[in-house]
Each structure stands twice: as structure tokens, then as C-alpha cells.
Length: 316
Image (cartoon, rainbow, N blue to C red; front, side, top):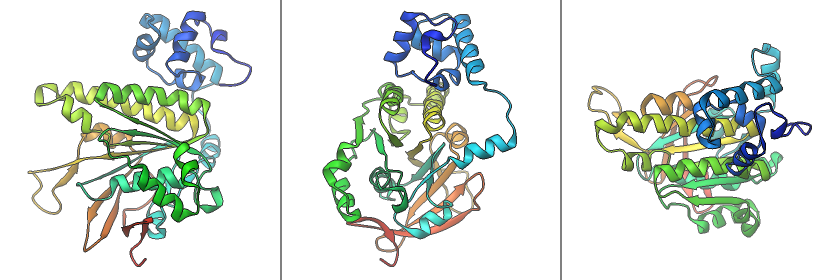
């Protein structure tokens, strides 16, 4: 939010509404301006009409609307990247995992999704000239796979102080899909009050698959998953941070040729993710990362290894 504008300055926002918004982590005008009226009504206990009025006023204040291509170009110039530790991997990504976007990493068990999550949560804290952003991380752990000792190994290999690195990772265990969505909302406040460069959700779909079983609940699952991803995308844009989500896979029986593996979540996850990476195991301890989708990078593959020190080139 701009320094001269407080929530109470927005037409329709009283003291109680402002308090509810702040308690829910919505302190920035951009976060409010990009909400739907239904979301704001739920968060602030308002009617849809009043909620839409507040959103409209917030958009007026921010002058949200059409902009020139040059303005969009300047915005993209502020985009930064977090390097993985493997040059070939970074090359297919255009230099690393980018801010202002959601990057989805999907693959089978043991394909290194969580290893990459740990690596980026460590690397984001490196100075920019060493491949990081000099900022902290938020880590939503949905499958109890966050291992502090692994962060310690990676930090030591980078020449970082392990205790400082762990202190700058805000980690929470999500116990169901509703809790996971609540943690994403709480991440708004953490990003507002701390210098955060990365938000990780590992994994994105596990709790949703567990909570919504069967075709009869598929529509509700997808609606809530879409809402969750919209929250993450607002975080990416409002705070110029990178959002990394890992995803599980399933076998597609309709696939006649090629790899039948496909990511969970369907079009909802695919359309909300600007960059999509498919990981698979290779010979011995090698892994292959294939860039499936990117706004401007061509499809490509990179081979890397998972070593004690973290993500490294295949010839390490």
C-alpha cells in the first residue's frame, strides 16, 4: 500500500472492516483490488454489493486498468530469478525460477520435487550476485516433508550460516485443504511484514485429493483449488516474489503413445502456473527436468543430480 493511503481512507472501509482485513493479512491495496467480491465479503463479513464497492475504490486508487506495453515492460524489468545450483537447469528456465509468477514442478515420488523446494528456500537467501534475492522464504508443508537438517546441509555447502537460513524460513504444516488455504492467507501478512522472496507449497494437491474423493466432489475440489491458486498468484504479483508449487501425478490411461504421466489438478493448476516443469528419474542418481510450458522459453530438458550438498550438475 502507498504510504499516504490507509485502509480507512478507502470509501466504504470503516474501522471494523479495516481491522478484519488486517487480521486476515490484507493490508495492501493491491491485495484487495485483485480479490473477488465474494472473497472480500467472506473475509470482512460484508455484503457482496459493499465488498464490490470497496474493490472498485481500491482499483481507482491504484489506477488499475489498461496500461501501455512499455509500462508492462517496465514491470517485467523488476522480475528477478532464483538460481537452482545447476547451470543447465537454470538455462532452460531463462536464468532461474522467476518472481511475479507461479512455477509448478510435478513428477513421481522420488523425482526431487521436495529437494528443489528445499534448495530454493536456501538459495533465495543468497545475495543477488550469487544467484539469490537476499530474502527469506515461506514454506507450506502439506506432507510433513520439510527437513531442517537438509536445509542445514545445503546452507553449509553455499557458505551460509545454517541457523540464519533456518530462521528466515517461515514454515507451517498444513493438516487439510482448508488449513492449507488459511496458511496461504496468513502468508499475505508474513510477506507484508518481512522481506520475503519465495513462497513454497509442497505439495499443492495432496490435501485436496485426500479431502475431496470421487467424481461427485471433483467440481468443489477444483473450485477451492482455483481459489487457492489465485491467492498464491496475488502474492506473487503484489510482492514481486517467486511462488513454487510441487504437484503429484497420475497415469493417463487414454495416452496411447509417449509418457502417460500427467499432473493432478487439470486445467485449473495448468492455467494458473506460468512455468511448468516435469521431473523424472534417470539412471543412477540423475534426474531430468523438462520445461513443459513457459510464456517465452522453448521446451527443453536439463539433467541434474541430487547430492549431499543439494542440486548439482550431472557431472558434479
